Length: 294
Image (cartoon, rainbow, N blue to C red; front, side):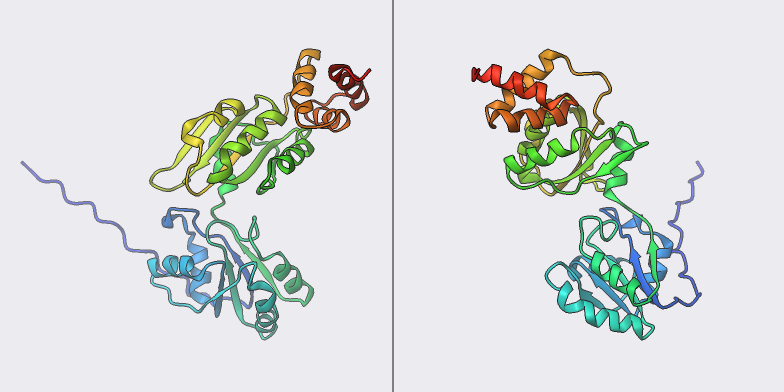
């Protein structure tokens, strides 16, 4: 019997021989699977005079995987103020500087905004090198509307702050995307359910990695899911847009009753008005009735 020849992995692509122009390159890196790096990102990382990394240990592993040994320097929220003048000087002298984060696209809940702004102000070129993004990766597999979305970053750490934060976002007719740490995930989902109601949502964990997991369902169901009680790492949460259907008086009373357990009548009316798109004054009068104030 003839034996099929083994399928060999093709050799790695050759890097571009074109010279890299001076400037600040904003380089997206993989969010998990190292093979999600783009060929252009490899060209930039290979040709950069300096690579600014949120965590040099993490970025060193990426460079080693592709045989690159360029100079790495730390650029995170603690080192940025000290490092920025030096970086701007290097750019003014015509050097090629690449900015990377631990994973995904820099500046998305990562340091770098002020460096980009000041580089532009001094006339240095700023060049995007697009690639992986956990926000977009989660949106594409959530099964929720993608024609309009809002990325809101990490919610506040405490429940009261989170609920106020969510209440401000509740009227927006767009899918909402959040980052959240595993230790706060269940509490955050519970606060989302209290403010947004039983909207459909998706929690993405370990995206592009070996144990990639996407859990979908109404927010209240996700909040009670034991598997989401305290998972490790950081999650991406995508929440469906506010429904177009008008809330019923029963919906309003239920939301007000829940909010009045935490807030005074005025604050409860404001929160529910934002969440359900109802008139705040009418809700305030109803809140007083429910509290038996008048």
